[in-house]
Length: 313
Length: 313
Image 1: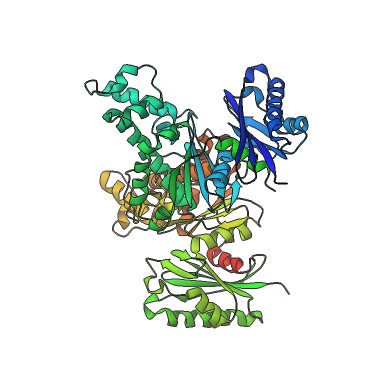
Image 2: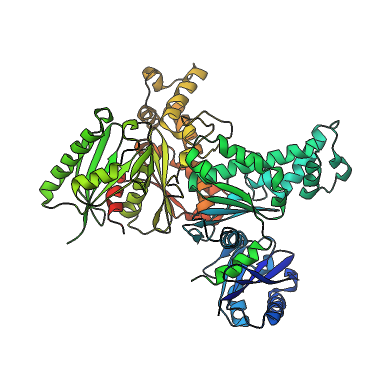
């Protein structure tokens, strides 16, 4: 019988669940509130119930459970080391609790790592050797598949693409550093750039003036898609920053592919051109022309990849 | 009988040869002029003679030959794709010519990659899982050992650490780009920085004024070691640039170790402190405190690593 996994993607607000075949086919999905404040035991019991409900219509139990979670994950120990949005779960042996409760093997990884694995299997059908996934949302995360294996680094912290410094002494980042990629292409950076341009150029027309105060990246994307020049400038900044980061990534790792995923990547058509331009202009033609940069086309890559990782040897 | 290899490091001026045991012990060494202008066949015959002379006192033939060469190497095809200082050898099937002539298996890699492997086996005794070697000379090169294997990337171009951009729109680099690490820490950058400071601050005393015109990094190193403040400023710049590059490397790859090799790294005690400072200040403590940055202690790492790679499965 073909193997089947459950994958989950634990975020600060919602936990997404999928049932996935070994080939990467999405068979079922569900979502439960994470509610970290209600405590880790309540969370585990709520999610375990959801796993069983997900399996019932499939008529069988999944062989393994994979967990993706936003934060610094100790993959060997199956614990969250550090997670600003899931403080209540830090240090708890989450992987083993799920494994024991659901009576099957489990694995746990950072959500950008599981998204990278999801991209590798589901989007690229394992047809590339070296790739990166960049998760674009509140933060900019990254996962690496090198030599057809998930690359975790020496303490499981590899792939912090969002905190590579692209402009020394530049914009302040949420991490406490300056000039990180995230400080130019993360959600807060985008909102800040809109506000700054609106304030710096008070006579410049922009539909974004009407929603000033609580602008989201999706507003800036809508405005830019409708031709708003100020909004287009903001996405050009995002594209230049991503172009710098991705060029550095490619110079170092000579990848086959980079896939952009996460909420902000939905605005990808507004900035992927700048990334391509940056790669085309790079004097190192062999690696920079070889790499394909594309937008993710699949929902739930983080959860799918988590499930798929739990089936790996 | 224990396995034995010959390794060579082909530079624009000299080709270094070593005989090396599988454990990484240097058994013999030699050097011949490369003289690319005399043609590739004359080069191969000159080096092959030197290999036989190297083996004679050892009383046996090496099992395999490893070649490290400065340039973009097609490791699969055993050819140099691009080599500014060895134009005459570009495209020639160098690996197979040596293999046929010397009647044993051969492999060929970029010299920074062979130095990384040399560092991994000889300096770290295979005791790390993930590491980088940064070669500091006229250019800044790099090699990566990831998951205890040499990482070549998808077209064999991985490890171009010197051409990661650390300052967008910054100093012009020999590659044609701007703001590359090499444009701040390569030989030319160091010489340029000395000249710039001497010109900008004509009243500032410096022993380097006496050798103005044809300054080399070793002059700046000697002056700094003797306490010359202007020379110390130059090395602080090198250290800050290397700190930025290495921090980015560590954020992405979460390495156990980074080793600095090559001529300019001999001035390492003058700038390694800046690199450590940059890592200590990085908010991502787990990867940045985990990594050890150190100066190479072994001569001929490029040739040793080439030989050792030829013994790998």
